[in-house]
Length: 227
Image (cartoon, rainbow, N blue to C red; front, side, top):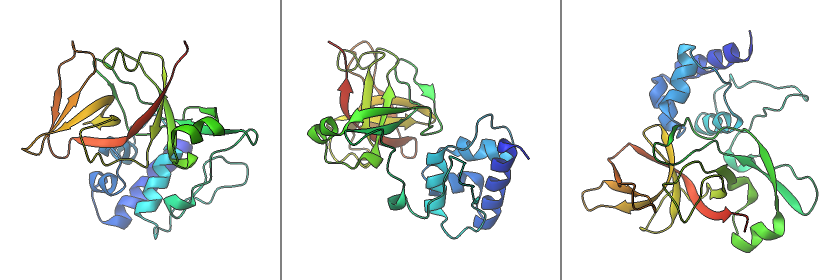
């Protein structure tokens, strides 16, 4: 079997093991339902990402079907998120962070969650100056759109702290998925339990998310821009 077939077989076996629907398996692992459904149905066109595998293993650590990978393979397995390998470092002064394939803007983009597309080195000293969060919880993304201008411009690199995934106040900027669409927004909690998604561009109207529609990926803690 090729890689996609292996992933499909893994997801189908996990669904049988859990005695749940594919959507319920995704919910337990805090993943988008389409991530699991596409592999379960055999319609996926990309492999399961490292981050997706880690979330599934954390949700179902007793499942015996996790692949045993060889030394030359890059997709590794873990029993718990706290046992994640630290990001690779090119030297003692830098640390490589993974990208989240998340676009934001007028329409957002369909997103299944984090996808390992590229690693980029960041200065350890610079990271320490802006956050005390461990590097394994930090990810970067590139903006695409003007909905958050002038705060965030299209093409700028943003740093996302995934250890912060529960907004407790109407402050800060958050990477979220609304349904399956990824975006960067400010969140405003309403008395009726809904959440408004606000853009800094006054030409973009707020959106409203009801219970179950909004998934917080992490808090945007820095914008890297050239002067």
